[in-house]
Image 1 (cartoon, rainbow, N blue to C red):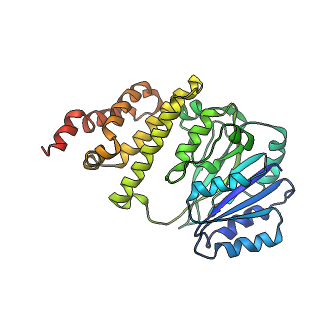
Image 2 (spheres, rainbow, N blue to C red):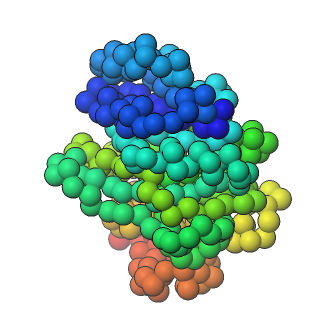
Image 3 (cartoon, rainbow, N blue to C red):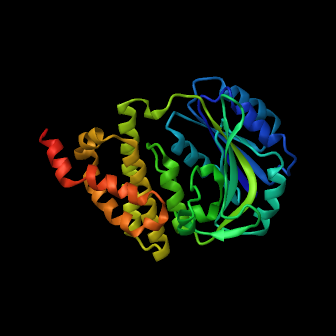
Length: 326
């Protein structure tokens, strides 16, 4: 078995048929590919559609579980997978036509830890492509690592852009952290920091649907939940930085930490920064970010502007005055 495609399903009745048709509508040797659908306690009719495909294909396996979230569903699928490589696919997206025929010979011939492919993003509202994600090279296969990905500002998420060697995941005990959002931002850098061989392949393989659902940024409570999740991810990465990673991987992961804090900082206003500081430790993270920004000024053209804002809004004097209500 060369490839295990893991598809968590929750409230996907409108989309999952298209997802499965994009797989089973392609010609491929079904002894080489398995599809694992994880029913994450979906309350709609998604599984009726999945079962239609399962009745026609012995390669489609179904896992049933109570609703535990995306990370838990992916981990459950990983526990059952038998393929040489793992591909996490979301139940509202679809894979590129003809991709399986192109990629299976590559997976058979090579043993790279991680393959990275190109993706397109589509608007649900218009049905038109809104974004194409580029790699280090759009014309040839090239090796890379987390450091180069960060320096050249190649996006390391979402997780669907990767095909990952299962033995590499098992040997490094790599699983997704459960009960957080933005889990891809935690898992992908950790995975890339541990990988010995990461390869960019200039093939479009995945189409990501940008749904019309309400934004998580719509209320302060949701924003706080998002910020809390990002701070937990930073804590987990800080723990990883204390382990025996290669020096280049540590430098790259430190850049990821800088990137994550910038994401937090640009996401909340000064009043929220002050209000959530005690609970989420934003002040101490700001101090660490000041040190990181000086190390990584080359990394992003807006770093100097970010440092200027950070030194004002997150300064000890400013925070102290806000706490006193001055």
